Image (cartoon, rainbow, N blue to C red; front, side, top):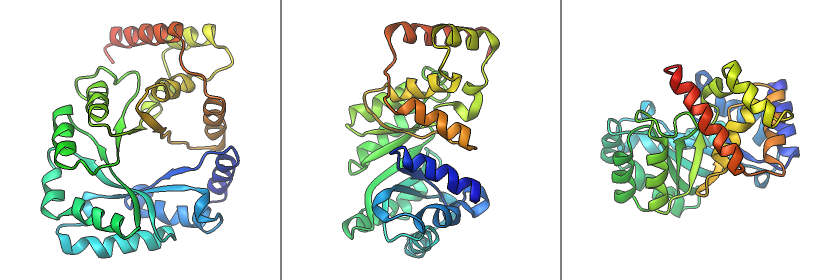
Length: 262
């Protein structure tokens, strides 16, 4: 917790303020850590806090109010800036519909206990289109986007991004560095990046690729230590969009990965 608090302090001191949690993260400790390291130490207006309604914690509509109250209490806040329907897919979306989860979130928003309603999403673009069509009240969507998954038929980063954009729904990015994969790249890829920008980290290329997209308003990068926090601060403070030459380099990098059958 002491190390985590130091990471939070550095992040907030740099003018960044977005935090993302869920009840099931870190074995159930994530919300409590946020309370100890963030919400009990900073005024409520100092940060933007997102929590999620996860499918494993409810079965029916009657479960939702108590769960929501528990999450607020665990985080030590009176409202969430964003509340996400967690990991929406063709498999679990019917459960959310049956429990009236979106309607519950709308009511909490009406009461001022949620500022924005969103969802995180893991499926194909046609499913995303269906959900956004049925729930135009959704304020934002959290999508897995990175330069390796951009044209992947499995993840469908580009297609999902385009669906959200067509619906006029702003995008939050998760997995910009693909769980650390794009921070530990093949030697040929690292050499290309370093020849062009020797002072930039390999991971910063991945973060900049996602932050470069017009309809993206937030990029979430999971940071494990203070060094990674400081690297992301350097990348996002005085943000530099990708140049045409840098976009070409990323296209070459994709080709290298494809050649390795990754």
